[in-house]
Length: 375
Image 1 (cartoon, rainbow, N blue to C red):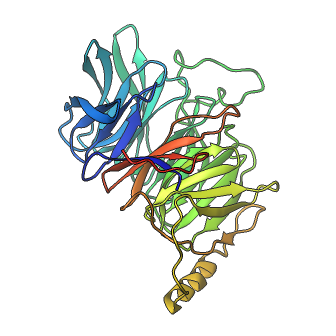
Image 2: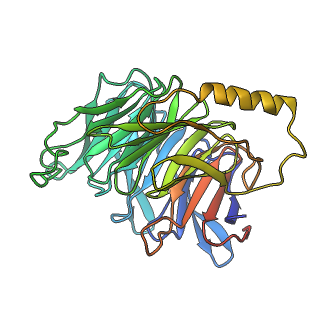
Image 3: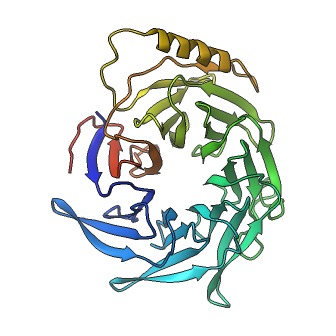
């Protein structure tokens, strides 16, 4: 196993985030509260309960440099929490939404954050020093349904979104006075706020878990039809690969390096994907392996045939692949909905990450040390 720590915090966890030094963790136990725990010697202790929201908290992100927590909720509100002494003080962010806020993420420079919503819109929020408050600018009239996840490009300008309308989109979020103009060779700062850079119509179903690779050259997201999509050179000349899986759909993805990606979802077990020297992505294995079934049944043979049938469509230059079924099972006992990076190696790749899901567990995974220590 690659799980180095398994923590049972609640019956169900909606989302989670770690403090900058990773000594504390904030999560929503599927209600309107955010619980903050800290690890002392041999056990986790609850330090704070953030209870400003009226409905379920659907997104949390903890900034690495400023130590601020941003939360969003189905109550259509967002709060930025600042630690003052032993207390966390909330500041309301006006989102101007008429539907639930579903996800949130700080930008790489942490001078703004994005909020996806059920109102078919995305809010880009930033701090206005003159008036001492957080305000938002809204990207409207592009999405046809709820925005399920967000991903900031490393340039701090481009924002990728996934939606239940089956599309992945890339927008410019350049805000005058907040962002700075780049070099003359950079095109990211030439675009206006809300301008759509790309629209990817690769899926006919809901899509989730969009992420950029560390360099920003590759974009990946998952479909509810047990497909995962990889797109290279999104801004200039997109080249796409559709990878069909025999197993259950993914809910979130994370690039741990430029050519390695972890996918999590309804199989309750992280999946490793990798690209070869030609850029062809394939499924490698489940991270938490279990013994395979004794023999393949007729049902599994039918599933394989259907997987091949649905894996024939092709966009771009690389071919689609249908991966063989792998045994399920592992540290999680229910759907994994959230994956968060933790420790990076000397080469810049992510060596450790955490996952949370509907079983109320937060599991820490190590890609180097295959030892399991439950706490």
